[in-house]
Amino acid sequence: MLSASRGKSPAQLFRYLSAKWPAAFNPKAPRPLKIGIHHDIRVLDGELSDDELRRALLAYTRMAKYLARLDAAAARVDLDGKPAGVVSDADAATARALLCTRKDKQETKQTPEPRAEPQAPPKPKPKRTAVYKAKNTADSRTGIVIETKRRRSFRKPMASSQQPK
Image 1 (cartoon, one colour):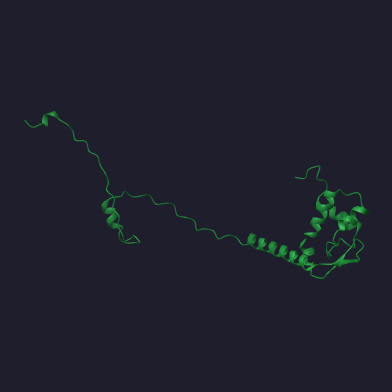
Image 2 (image 1 turned 45 degrees about the vertical axis):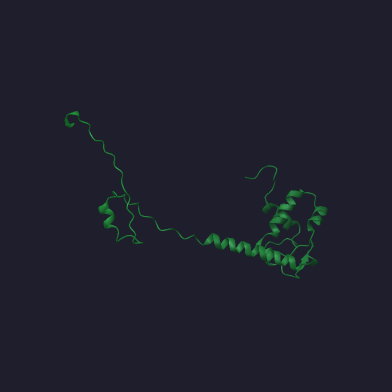
């Protein structure tokens, strides 16, 4: 949700910049911008706040089309569309890394994770008796049968009539 203090969206801000300086800001064929172009915009335009300008430039410079155009030694442009420097090798490498990261994220999003086969409902546990264990020795994978001893407690009735005389 956009709060009142945030102002315009980056798309609205970008449209404003592209209307004011179409030679520098072209969404269909973006060109690398001059380093420090925000200072030039700040001098020529006082309508945008610092935060709005920062968000607009971030949105523009993070577009995939813009990043794809950042090749080493490509010409950067100023607000009038005139050459103003070149793209460094480090900037080109950073742009390629960002594009690769995005591509990897999209590929991992698109490939669904393999689903586990639905499990059959658990079988009811049979009573553990010696006969049951003897039947299932052939089914056991290890061939080892482990028997457990069941403790039973019996109470012997104490009848006074059965006492020896």
